[in-house]
View 1 (cartoon, rainbow, N blue to C red):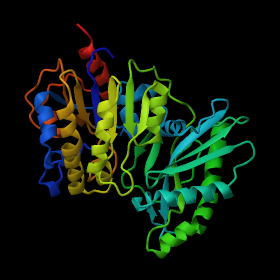
View 2: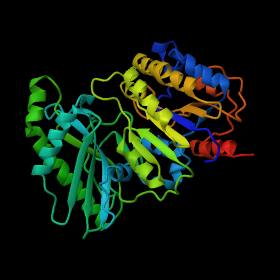
View 3: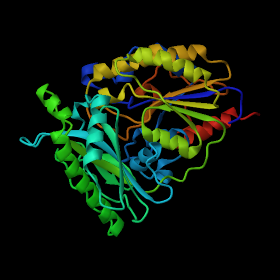
View 4: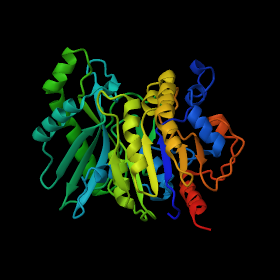
Length: 423
């Protein structure tokens, strides 16, 4: 990318929302005190972005892909492959298939399923559970299995083989998502029961992987149920992490053109690391540490963003997403206020006249839906060559009145690049 300044692109995970009665008919962006986001909106152009397309709710990886200029409808091959590749679970000399997983909690007596084990798994607990499963569950000969846990309830499951073809064309065992092509589409009001994996195409490689998944889920459930970690959790009145939910499998990596110029990505999920490796960007893991406050995390992240020598610095900020999933609008508004005060404000103050700042979202997670949706997301951008419009506040309704000429996320980066080329 030409030009002497830096383009900072801040993606607020799941920040976009809908009017909520508990917030007086406002969205969390509109309810939160956001003087710095409002100042950014007043200084530049605003608009609502379609991240992928109607009917396709983005994930953080597909959202990042779109914001960096790659249309997921063209390039995306699934969350699983990017997760597996990002965690180096991909065998370039053989066949690989990878899945996103959740460490879930199934009450055998009531049949009640908590897809996220209440989000309270500590890293140490996850490490013990993963080690026990890998030690005691063995796949059939010729198949290598990889398993990891990260981020309180999330994880990756991958199978590789040098001798047998593997296909990710299998259905999810996670009832919260249905596989639709390369995309995992959230299911509102699902039955709350784990599902068996089944081949989605009549292909021996897909039938093999469905069998591998079902066998692994059953065998790992026996290990997890007997684990001292889960016995201790139950004794403490917490839900056991006794079931793996598998979704969004794939066996193909996206074929992405390399980025132009230097791009740095800061994020939390292995899929973002996979995306960065595929496009030739630098990736830095940046997430709130256990016991760390979000304001302290932003204060420590900011110097890294400002010192980064890249032409484009992309930062995925997780704060608003989980309150959206948990229908906590006041908490979501608080998370947004913290971002405004401790990240956006200091970042704006530190920028030079040649720098450009974009703040938007990778997807919407409306509180009353509790899942990702295909809603448009607000965006504000200010920098050289960007004439301000009449919008003076950051939020969904205000952004809809903006003059941003871009309507789709994958068109944003080409437009910004065209503005930054020397005349």
